[in-house]
Image 1 (cartoon, rainbow, N blue to C red):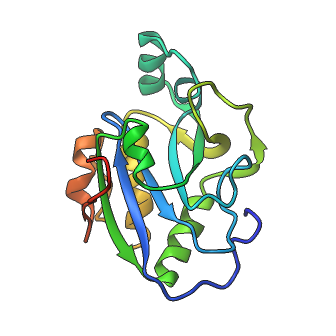
Image 2 (image 1 turned 135 degrees about the horizontal axis):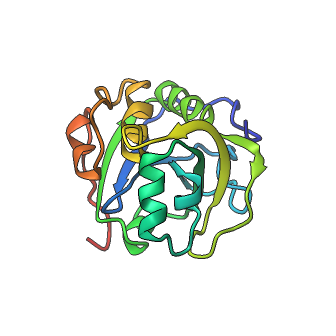
Length: 190
């Protein structure tokens, strides 16, 4: 676990966002003051993004169609991506197509963070990848077409009571329909 993750937390509320990047989704959390759950290059960022995917495909600067097909059909190793953001609106400037938000208590945020952190090994950080401001960390989960990045997003939120089951979720457009209590984020730049 990153330093400061087990620090006391105020009751809240805290914002939890889900960003839809067009084919891929991620979870973005408002970081409590004093915590350091951001990536090694921005541990104290105000907002921390978590995403997951096939290691070879996700970490490729220009993935080929063959790499995409391989990621779908051959069980492969995975990575969890962690990025730090100064504001949630920065996600729009980075290319997010849709962002939804929900407020949660400090206890609910702690449960979600523990769930997300369980998917990565911060001791195994990969070198920075051009085009990605965050860092990639090893993940023990296996990637295959029926368990992809979008199902991962829903499953992580479901385990914290913020979504229904991720079963059957393949595409980013399916994610919003599984979320509970989220609404369109009213962010500057929209």
